[in-house]
Amino acid sequence: MTNYLENVKKYVESPVEDAVDSLVGHLGIALESRDGANVAATDPNELKAIRDGYCNINLDLDADEADAAIQKVCQIMQGDQFKCRVTFYYLLAKETDRMHRLC
Image (tube, rainbow, N blue to C red; front, top):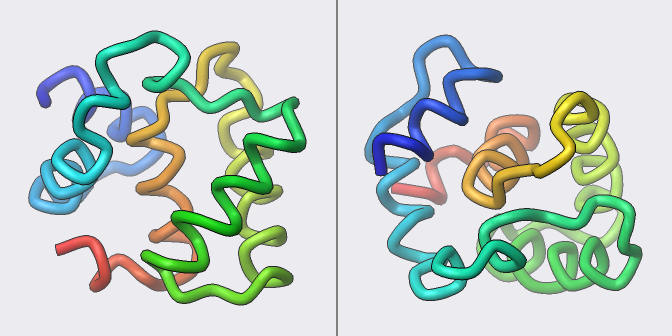
């Protein structure tokens, strides 16, 4: 969990640790593989899956809200070749004022 928290701290000065813990638990086994632990931000199919899955189900965003949030997070994280999935999802919640849905 420490590595995930440190990664989130690259973008958020004081992240909510319980929210990071919650995301790590939610993502579970997916984080065990390199492909699962990172978001392929250039893959439209992956971004669509994030929109239709995590954004719609967990953050209760409609498709337009989700697409806008995903693009914003992609811009925020553009300097990272490997975009940590926990950080990406954390930022989606933060940028859409849905942090309360993580804890």
